[in-house]
Image (cartoon, rainbow, N blue to C red; front, top):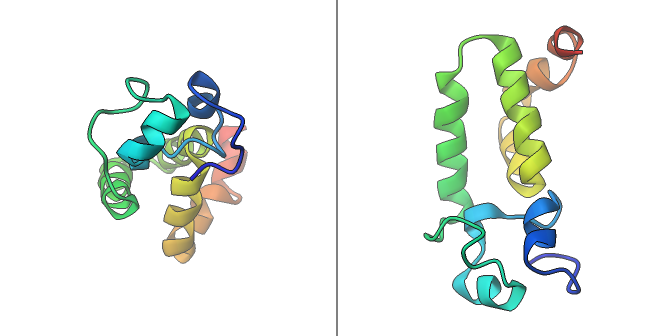
Amino acid sequence: SPTNPTMSGFAVVRDSLQNRGSAFTNEERKKLRVTGLVPPRVFTLEEQLARTRAQFDALQAPIDKYKYLMDLQDVNETLFYRFVMDNVTEMMPFIYAPTVGEGC
């Protein structure tokens, strides 16, 4: 559940710390007024991680993987940090130099 109970609607979806994308339960969606602002199907964090893994693995260039991870962090920090922590050894080259230097 989001950590800021005063946020709702677009504010929740736009805040990468609050936004859990399709992992919001139906009850959370109603309470936070994000129904229609997130995908209609509820996906567990594990399902989101599997989709994230597939999308990440489909990318070839290290810079593309770096950009994908940074976009994920901008949208859903919960998913980003869980994905990185579950794969920390593999992710370090993409979120730490030299790939970061290439992206900047």
